[in-house]
Length: 395
Image (cartoon, rainbow, N blue to C red):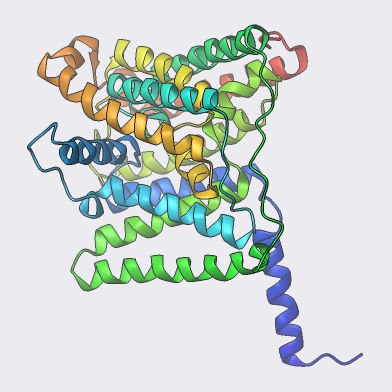
């Protein structure tokens, strides 16, 4: 049977679209792509972070409420804030184009836990000098030893958070949340029009980057696109740092541990090339309070992310899917981080918790990469053993 050129093209486009938005991407693909994006952000400006953008939003909330008089940076001119906007819109676009966007409500208890989790994560990020991205992922990727301390803290906090959730299930059994009944009269098949809206928002986001470029703010415009790509990748792959620290204790599963370790391996080796060749300053991104601040911050943050069901990055992409609980988490995180960090600075608390420690200055560049690789491989090996033995499973 003869097929026309346009018919073949349409078939190929539909097949490609279904692969991109009709099924979830493998987690390892997300790990590789996110590492490449992180390196591009590092080369373009500085190591990838999220908490700074949240803090900027919290500063504005306080300014609007009249609590503070100092006008913060404009959110659409703050680099971390713009990257966060991009991550949210990328997830929103991907959710629409995959027909997965839906406003999802929950119970009063879950909203309360979302707020408490946000407060704890905002506090933990202040202690650790960053969230799960800036204080753990990027910190390890740029050889800040605070990242390893936060890694341990995140694991301990996740374990305690999981133990609390198990206790809560036994002590306060609750009925499943029932969403309000939808009207039987539907004037529009939402599932059919979602991809069209997704395409429009994608065009709008790209247009926003072009507007930045036309205003001689190309750097910010590109960061918007980097964030957009990160949001698409995370939403389509269901990539979540929480799983790397929760699943080994909940089910024993180590898939996300392997993915995060792979991603960090790529990020770290790329970062070594960038720093060793002075494409960026060698100590750029090394500011995390090692070791007390990072460890304690990770512990608090890890407990909070179990309560809320999302970390700093997954909070954004889950909001893009319509999860209202995470909106409460974002508000709690932003307000708390914007309040706690200035208090800690004004009382010189951060200096007492440690200082930025650069791994190559401790063990030399020649041993940095073997030590870096050994720690990640050890993490994978121990968690893979736990997957088989269930030694650390909390149940």
